Image (cartoon, rainbow, N blue to C red; front, side, top):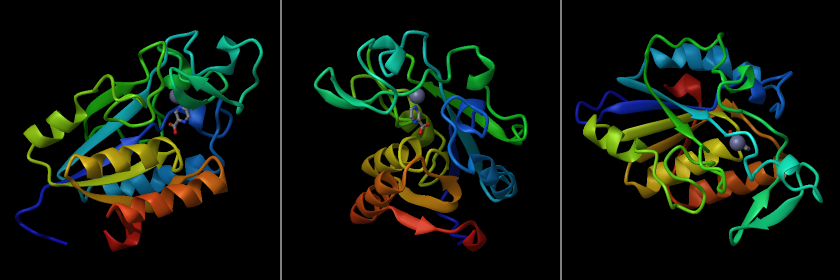
Length: 207
Ligand code: VGL
Ligand code: ZN
């Protein structure tokens, strides 16, 4: 794995209290990835994190749509939108990265989901690709060639972040044991989509 021409970045997606057990949108067993990711960090040239960071009243929240309940799907700005419980509100405890995640080696944190009217699963763009977070330019400027994606949730933000990393031309790896999903159906779909576009599935013990 030690190719001198490559520069590997670890992208830690949304390791925030609201996605961990006890959080507003808890991912089952989400906390189990933290020790794995802490160990992994030392094998990378660059470690970057993303942070879901919604204003209150965000239109991805079921609470913003009085006729709907969490996990229902609506049409929002021409796209299918799953309605979520309120989560990761800017400045709240639930939006903080877990204190159990080692953060000393995190060089930058990219915040997403900040536009009221549009959701953003990917760390690179919002779902309608109207706005960029600057992550792709940053990784390129840092000379990164290979991106390894982990964190929460496997079937939403980790999936879309891996997809966009690949679309941006990075050699992309999805670390299967360093992520957990919200639902098994969406997870199966995500894995098959990613495999179809050349994202490689890898386990942390191969790193
Ligand atoms: C996420 C749903 C809503 C995630 C973020 O981090 O996977 N999922 N917002
Ligand atoms: Zn969100």
